[in-house]
Image 1 (cartoon, one colour):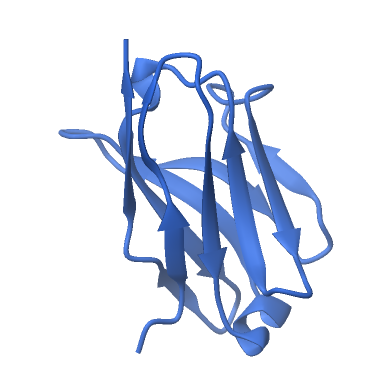
Image 2: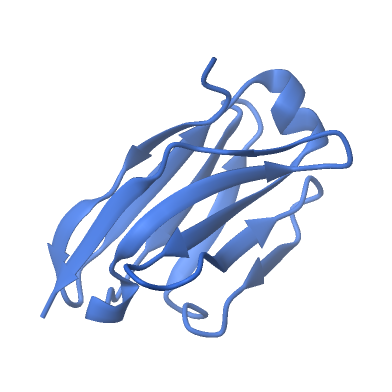
Amino acid sequence: QVQLAQSGGGSVQAGGSLRLSCATSTIIFSIADMGWYRQAPGKQRELVATIARGGSTNYADSVKGRFTISRDNAKNTVYLQMNSLKPEDTAVYFCNANSTRLNTWGQGTQVTVSS
């Protein structure tokens, strides 16, 4: 059973934009803080951005000012708007839902930024 369904991503040139989406159930969305993580080849998975149920956000220093995380409570969906993309943003991006009752991951989506 897919709990987090990701969409978006793809290939873009440096300086371009992409948007990732992550849809989930009402139950999960109501109890979980949501986040985006990424994993580049040969590297560990790292935090990109998180958004709490109340709407407070947190970003990795490397994406501050370029990426925006948001959540649509009516659609049970979290978004990651990525602007001014750089080749070093190339990675598989994972959606995450985290609470005291669960910690679950999306299937991952590839983002490739060419120079």
